[in-house]
Image (cartoon, rainbow, N blue to C red; front, side):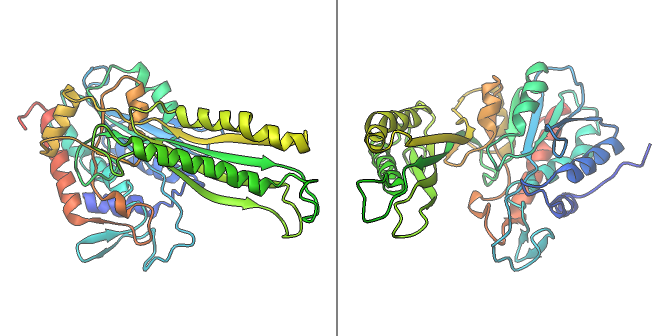
Length: 392
């Protein structure tokens, strides 16, 4: 048996950031490191790999594995790309400046994972009476894809935990509600023709612009509906259009045009309303006009990513516990998405609570403040007391 590996939270952050786990790359080197770290403390971990074996979730339990009421510490191991960003230091080497740790993933969200792992010896010291589960996922940044098979293969079959704590950056505030995310790719296919004969062609760019205008109208409608709960910023369901590509030359009527779009819906909105209305508008109002000129014209919309919102479960034992651990009086709501809604769909009380500010996520020179790390350490220390039966 190898000697137990002991790393401070800062050392663990340094180590995890060195792994370039950008979503289009493998996370297996990081997974292997965590496996070896846990094994050195006598903790076995279980992998759930993707289809080609290049990525893996990791699940491990400290304490009585078959006991209900455990605490799941959940985090994603992938990070967003750094290409094209102006970093002042190596993104995959932690640099400390002015009370902040700079590096890709320091805020989103390797610091939470690192602090939790660094506390493994503390969780194990007195033999935890309540299990602590680690659930580390892949491909969160590209649609919360990786965690789904781990939930289906492990979480649903285990004794029901008391709460899942998703450690996304929340400034160590407890979050019990966030919006859902739906993103799509729409491709309009028309008919090429000389630009002097607009009656002979079907201009894909102009029809795409019409569809984008329809999305803009729905965005304005959602803004007027507002947020009845008064908890979200911005206080309404948002609709956004991103990259648009179409056309080859000014004197050629464009045959194709594609655009990416998304909406982030309030928890009380039917998540299918906007896409259903968009598709109905396409079928009833747009395609008939296109096909009157060219029967082969088409509009295809494919889903890119989906993640459910997180609905508040106020007063649940799990939320009450996390509020106490974080020393917060009330839970908050946020507009960014997480894996929390997927755990909630598995009928497990779930909240978000982790170090760092979401405003720093995905940016060049991403950072987490050392004060946030210290606050997360105090949170984990209280959790260690709780699972060991000590008062908190």
